[in-house]
Length: 348
Image (cartoon, rainbow, N blue to C red; front, side):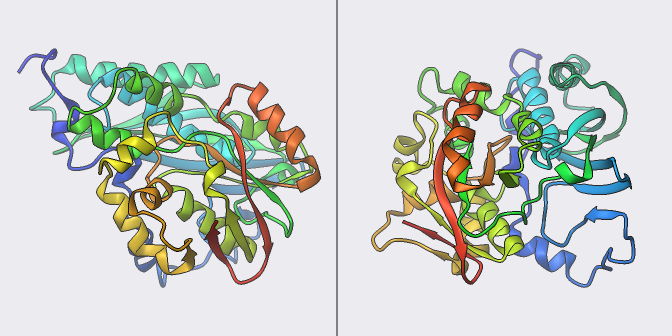
């Protein structure tokens, strides 16, 4: 098989953040693990399922550490590398930090993929790191049955500018910075049903760095941030609700979507991860009566390198939204609010 005819997605049983374990499975695996409480300098660990770990060095400096990797969701090797890198770096931006370096994580079926394909994946990832202003300073590689690529990222921030998914406050407005539908598009790719121009739209969205998170972290009106990835909007909103001890409301008509996401969802395109997500947390989500299954799948659709979900002071929300749009996120929208109540998410 020549490099020109290879389809990366044929070598993987899943793709992108749709590869993530279902939330319920992850909870079972982490149950009984030792708590990190004795480490007083550990500002963020596993307690609220946040985007990255954070360690306080001194009163002016905290280190942020994260890792993310997955199997191909697209066939173009350079695009796969770019998407995976942007997705990994996003975790640092979601904590309000600035990345400083990356380590590559690579697993490839060496007997099936030619070196030039693997080289393109690495070059794609390095190009996004260069865009973020960081080096790929090392890494680790193995011979694996399926292609896997991602990064470990180290970042920095001021401890007082660290933003958590547990930071939302009663009355906060919720902003989403990118459109949903990446998983739906990837399902359509596998069946050759993606409309003209949709692939380019998806790649543009998934390779758009979430650097606005670091910029917003200095604003005291921004209380909480998380990125929306494999658990879908509802799953990551529920993590914010649990961590903050609040009830979140999502206005479904305000949720931004990729251009063809609704039409493709209505035609039945969805990933298996969308159903696994709903089975994991659906009991803590309130849906409006009569909501079609395809519309619910938009809200549970696993996003790869998705947008940021931001909780901010309601009186400052319109100005913050305009700043986000001006920074290069035209689909950003005000999509809901937080209020006192039992942690859950309601869709209206």
